[in-house]
Length: 176
Image 1 (cartoon, rainbow, N blue to C red):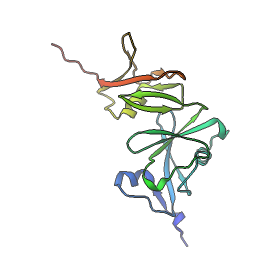
Image 2 (image 1 turned 45 degrees about the horizontal axis):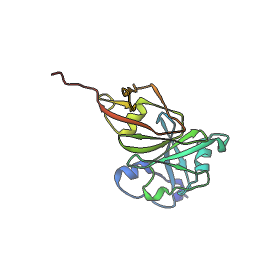
Image 3 (image 1 turned 90 degrees about the vertical axis):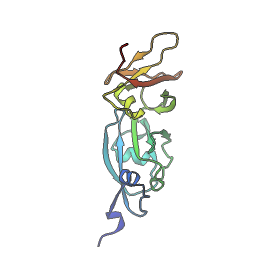
Image 4 (image 1 turned 180 degrees about the vertical axis):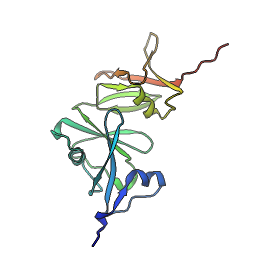
């Protein structure tokens, strides 16, 4: 006999379809890394802790990892190891897991983000900004100097002190 836990509710599909996940089921979530490479995973708890998500990803030691939630609008929020997130509220779309014990802050097009690594790639910044990968570039703002372009695949450092500011713009120029 089949139970609801045998059925799998895809959280990303629920958000895309604008409907709430059904309670009492198993839930397919997406777990990603610092390059925004995701893989599906299934969990039965609709309110998992960060610790449960790290275990689900098969990462050890658990205490040396941190979890950042990604909301449907692209906001990133860190979870403490024993903090829960509610999959039934459509507030979390994906999870990023980092082998790190520290968070780094930066702004991108005026929005503040948290990150679990001392570096972030140019193409990842463009994905977070939700801009066209082929036609947009990303730059690190340099106060008192020339802004530095961050090409796809190139790592931009994130400092534990201070706040890096990145911005995107079109790669094309108009001659005139």
